[in-house]
Length: 277
Image 1 (cartoon, rainbow, N blue to C red):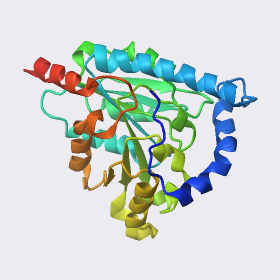
Image 2 (image 1 turned 90 degrees about the vertical axis):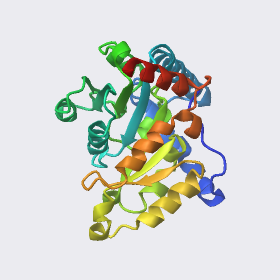
Image 3 (image 1 turned 120 degrees about the horizontal axis):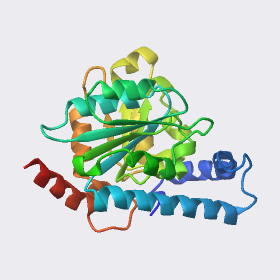
Image 4 (image 1 turned 30 degrees about the vertical axis):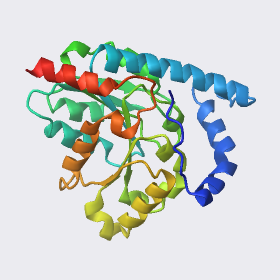
């Protein structure tokens, strides 16, 4: 059920990544697990299995039972996740009912921005944890009327490392990177691109000002995850937002959402259409 690394990864990049996997995962699993890394691979596998079960339960509640298409947005602080989701909210079709779960370490700044768009918002703060988890998302959707929703956006905590191994139960995972992070950011964080279904390169309107090569970023993303669509956007100018919306609307049949189900988004979308009619 978890988003497994996609096949076809460039061999050079794979070889470069393998030596750092253990250290990175030890850092991840130290958060929220008593402050220490698991002693062996079996303990790590147990943690992952528990997360996957919780994510599958959330996915069932949303997609199968509720007919709600959920998209998770993850990426570093400052990549523009909030602005992109706001742009998508502004472009939603007439009658589409959307909600947002806003994840942050502290504060309600993003939640306040989302509420200004007239949609239900649940603010989830994680304290010291550097990522959302499916248990937190499950509690957040308890506060939403799923029967009155068609689409749910979940913004994860700003981080390029910790969220990769913690699927939240969304039908689609979207990783957002900004040109302001440098055009080597994709190569530096290959695991998160392997864990996601859609790549967004954001703030392209200022690429020249910060000396970033968007084409290079796109090529790196395709080398790491060749089957994953890549879209270049600017939340400021609106460039690429309509294409991003179309890619989201294609659903997990086009991307592969990592869950064992029979066209959940198709049935969910049909139910949403029926409610709008």
